Amino acid sequence: MAERFFKINESWRSNLSSLYVEFKELTTMETNNQSAYLHRDETLAQVEIAVQVVIFVFAVFGNATVLGVLLPRNRTRMHLFMMHLSLADLFVAFCNVLPQLIWDITYVFIGNDFLCRLVKYLQIIAMYASSYVMLMSAIDRYIAICHPFFSHKIRSSRVHLMVCIAWILSLLLPVPQIFIFSYKIREDGQYDCWATFEPDWTLQLYITYYTFTVYFLPIIILTFCYGRICYVVIKRNNKSDQFSRANKWKTVTKYHECASDVDVQAFCKLNVKIDKCRKNGISRAKIKTVRLTLAVVLCYFICWTPFFLFQMWAAYDPSAPYTSKAFVIILLFASLNSCTNPWIYLAFSDGLMERIRRWKYNSPPASHHIVSGLPLHTTTAGAV
Image (cartoon, rainbow, N blue to C red; front, side):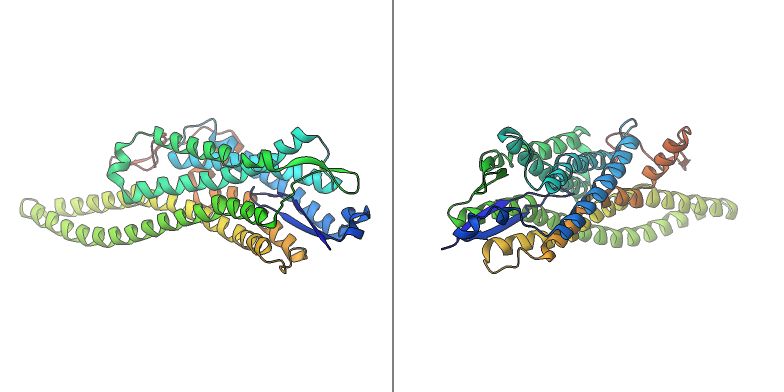
């Protein structure tokens, strides 16, 4: 009768998430054969290692650039979340991708029991940090757009509190990793970092717990937040357009009664400038931050949904093709998320791009432009 061994290899490979479960079914005869543990597709392994090297380099370069620009300067609330997302992605690169890269090269874990448990714990911390910092940034946008009066009453320290909560949860939720994984001797006489799940339902519980807390729970909350944001933005824009047209006509009519034609024309031009400035400087800025966080969420969803669905399928269906090359491709595709985030920041943040140009050429910061008394850019920590 075949014995089932489960080697959980949390290869997160880039964004930090990913419970790469490698199921191995070995017969008693195969168990006695040392080569059974050491057999792998070397061509696929080389491709996997090469891709991980590229992911590591781009993740470190991109996120280090974002941090280098944001750290020494005043930051808006959105910049603070971007900074911590970049920190989480760097955490993935050094605490997940790099150890996994070394592990894939050696094929067996090189270290001791303490190092085994530490690596597994740090790998999952990175995964949670990425998900929960992103979740907190979406909640902040939800409060700013859907509850603006409540948002103005709260101090800017709220953002720091939300970030702290995200990191504390990221430290606490992966604690089971320390007890599940250990440095054990295999049947072929070699030591490796792995976990044995007996009976089989404990493996299903393990996969379900991490999939729900890392992926499904954040996705549910994110869907609610952005659903409400879209509804409120559309509703307010319609009301704002109607009110603006009616109010402008009343104001111009009153002014016309006691002013000359030249004064009326000047007043109309000034009113248009003020409206345009408000639209471009305030509400447009908020909408832009919503687009940025939404782009990050969509990228996360596209990269990680196939992987987590495949994980659940492999955990609950013994006939799932979990040893196929498709699974490795899905895993590598998910890992691209850490590389893409810095480019999303650059694409949706004009201020960040300008800071990078000044940082590169060592030029002094540009002065703030004021139009009709309304600042186009803010640099306080409590700003949107």
